[in-house]
Length: 60
Image (cartoon, rainbow, N blue to C red; front, side):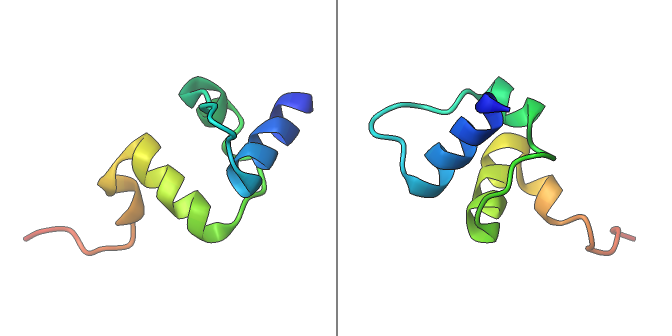
């Protein structure tokens, strides 16, 4: 629980020069509650563009 809280705090209120571990962020992704815009941005960094375009129609 502390790890999730720490990630949420860092994402919502700033990092103070520290970095969020990608592994920890991916591990707790479904559990963390952060601002939707930050979530979208972090999703882009973690998973790339493909994750943001899930609802687009497939190419013919």
